Image (tube, rainbow, N blue to C red; front, top):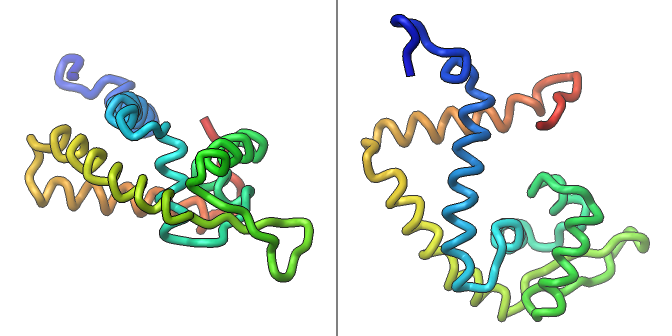
Length: 155
């Protein structure tokens, strides 16, 4: 949106635009995941555990941007559904490691094409080069706080 040839404050604020895009994408993906009986956070957790088996509840909470207690409740639901299992941490008896079960991997494998189809549909108007730039920008932005010495506030 332009205002007399100038970008509006909203258009000039990448933080707002990324948040708005995330909320829009999350809503569409959430609707698609209903058929797999998964929430967006559950799907993300299964993806994370597939990529990094043995994560702790705190690790999952950080990665899905939620409180530890909320992540624990969500993981408890996944555990009751037989999609994840907890095992004692080999060196930290206060901690547990979380792993996908065979049923969790199967549910994830069924849900991934659904999410990919949603993303493909939503990004169909973009060229491969445009998508590559967006992907590179998003990856760098997620890595930027790790390079900072001060902690950045969350929205």
